[in-house]
View 1 (cartoon, rainbow, N blue to C red):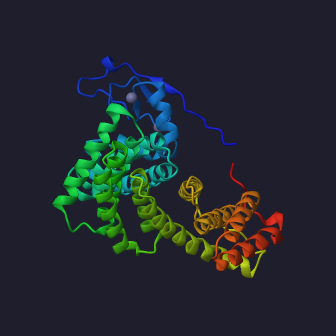
View 2 (cartoon, rainbow, N blue to C red):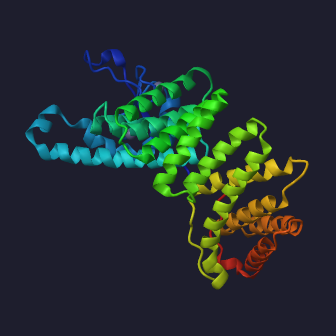
View 3 (cartoon, protein in one colour):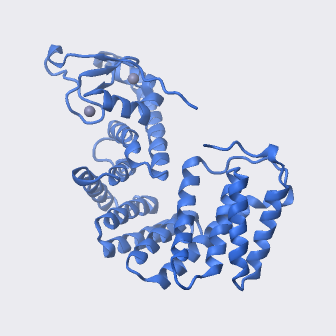
Length: 368
Ligand SMILES: [Zn+2]
Ligand SMILES: [Zn+2]
């Protein structure tokens, strides 16, 4: 179990600071009363925001902030080299913040992604300037973070997304990847707000652009299809949903089968972690949604249930959880026996044999 040491904050008295040097909270930009006792260059309005920032990102970047926030203007002008070094640290900070925020969002922990998202945007502005197209990924990350919120804070999502939209419309040649990300975020917001037609339009565009970058059979595209299908599910269009979920499950099946293949040849091969925890959670959620959808239909498509269960079994095998892998493998076998697709039964049986023969000792460390 990981223990987290929150550094002691020292209290500051805002009114005692020289005029024009008032400190603002790192998270909410309100007047700050606390200072991080370790770096002494980061400030907070209260202990709650200090804690949220610490666990959200500050713990990982606290020492990196010292050189860039304590440089005086004098040393800036004296040596161009210092400025170059600072830019380097800032880029490093952007990369760290971006990857933390992306991980949290993939896991569905929107609120926890906010401090990293804010840090990312903050340093992107410093490095690229306030109007750069390079800010768009940071706008989108932060917008996705606020999307988990209710009420007035959700307005930030709309604001950030319209900033991103404006930037992209001014730079239409910014590349398919950025268009894909923007449309996906817009689709998510419209889905939350109940604008299903708007969401359909944006997800369709999202898939078009994602296919240009990653290919139609990529998992990125398949995640787009999944989101699109969820909208059709809200509209009660069962047949369309089913055919799209089928596509999604097929994509994951071929992706996971490729990962499993080396083990079918050599059951004792060592299990390298293929997915990080966030990705594992995301794929698990997608496959469970498909499975639940089919379970609630009066006339079930057993082949689709078998396929989704097979994918879950492979996913948990790769995650080192043999019990889950076996349970999903068994339900996959049951469903596949009720469907005419014999090819699937064979694949399931092979996997179950592998799960049974694999020695327990070489299992990957199970994450709690
Ligand atoms: Zn605050
Ligand atoms: Zn600090």
